[in-house]
Image (cartoon, rainbow, N blue to C red; front, side, top):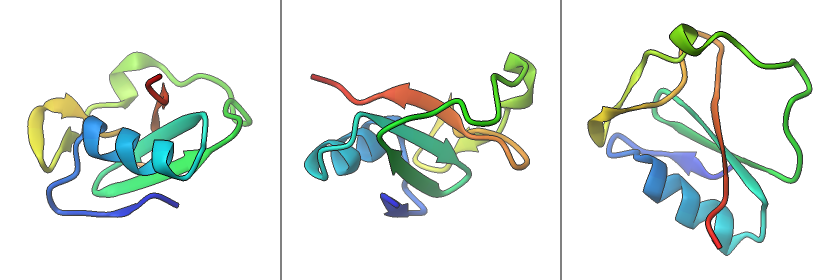
Length: 74
């Protein structure tokens, strides 16, 4: 797990997971998840990821029981 933060953004989660040598990160509310793989439950419809990130309301941090998943930056 990348951790929780009331200031969570995609960039913050990306940096946390990159520092731990993971290839992917997921956002769900104020929680950052790190992983080496993703897709176990398949792809959700785009509209299901509608929860704004607490640190940047213009970014989406997943939804109810749904992660927004990204590749860690190079």
